[in-house]
Image: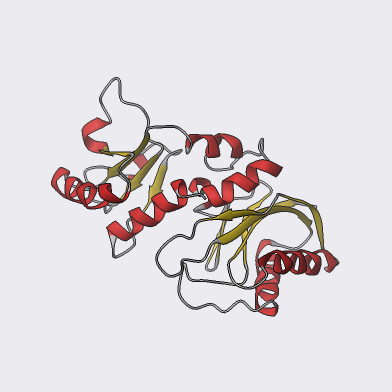
Length: 246
């Protein structure tokens, strides 16, 4: 049966007990087997919707369920254990995210595999590295441990792509005070510099007719932040996920 990796998170109620109940419930399903779990770790919340510390972890499952059926089972368990879906990044009793389903690359209206954001989130990568360090990311083509270790390198270089140099400079000036130790760069000004180090993350904020095309960016560090309304908020959330681990 396919191996699947999931992330668990929560910051309301007795989260350790909730995690245990959720995994027991999944393991009782005739088509799901719990293989192992990481340790549970306390992590800083992302965004401003809650200030309560989260508990996070990862688990490996074996299942004969198709990806969408597995997701439906996760959502049923979340609901049974008190999850209320309201504001993004808000407090919650339980979050179950499907990260990987073997090496499958899959997209439907309600599901993307691999999970599109876990590769730059420390609160996911640290526990996942504990149980699957050598597992290959099917799109980034490096291991889970390599993805995590990229986020540990200092200085942490964050590059903005797809904007004019003036807009990029203004955006960097707005965000820099929140992250004084991050080295912000404009991709278009550094991509051809012979001694330039590869950024840990490249945030593409452009449109299809931008001077820099999404497809021209290196696959490993690129992430698409072009679809949101508030570019500053998106960058803050991204950097909190990558840096503000504990």
